Image (cartoon, rainbow, N blue to C red; front, top):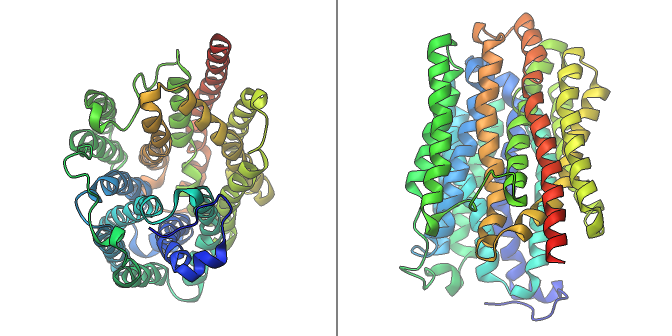
Length: 478
């Protein structure tokens, strides 16, 4: 392993050793995945106009996130048995193949199949990027490298909407996915050359010690998300209610099965118990993740259909949300611990205000007010999330702190998948089941965001509970 032994990074030495170039290459996987996430919303109006299938729009995010969850959980375990380089090549090829299917899809159904494969490849690339830092670089420079990787998400938030809008307006939405096909293929080929160190070309020497893959739990999750998403297609009271109920039972079964498998568990014990900061905090993560994905999925489609707002404008409103998240995270990073409760609650109130604000501003069509709601929502996440994560991890039992730290982003992805599926039900029930037109968009705009306001309230209550239980725990320890 090559690296620098001091806490201060000598970037010239890192470049001369070849490690900096290797790190930049590894980070390309994060850029591909994150740019794809932010790009899709801006191409959705053009894509739906060509492929139809507006009833399945919610699936585009739900199925992508589902693939990313499964692949992210698998990739960290696979490197114990298969070389890191081989894992990276397979993940990049999966990603490129999924993008190719999306680019050439003659129907929405085939497009969704491509999105699932893309999600599998993208989720694996992100997980492998973090594994690569751990295996290929000195521990002394991990914080700096992880910081750069976090900044890449901000770059993706800016470049994704730009890429989608430019490709759609100058060529076709299909070319946007064509670029990712080329990117995935190039990364797979380059992996064979760049990842040429012994650490990357052989499995970890932990055969038999890696935790087992949670097949049963993730199987329940996959079935649950598909059932919930299916409830929104061809809305019928009895059928949709039954599918929705079965999907919710599947979610409960997922968390139950996960708790039964200590060695492969994805979440800490007493996951949603409000008697502990961990349970209340994870409830806050789940509630806000479900409640806030509607704009990213349906916002550009509604604004374009209802108010004729350009794709580039809608894309950058979405990007502004992510940029606000990144900037405010940096600004509050050094806040003193005694401000923690105020910051978490303040961030939760900002997120809830953004959710409620969209219910008013989207039907109105005021770009400044919509932008304000996006900034509130993204900024609220940026303020609250670092401190919320710290409370969850610090409050978890010592033997569960590693699980707790990984559980926050996992719960976010699950929330996005479930939220996209639920948004599809609301959107189709309020108009999109009849097709994409001005009247349907107006009706969906009135109900879609309003439907998630109760979850925003739950998130605020969970934030209050998280901060109060954390304070009591600190006083007891003190």
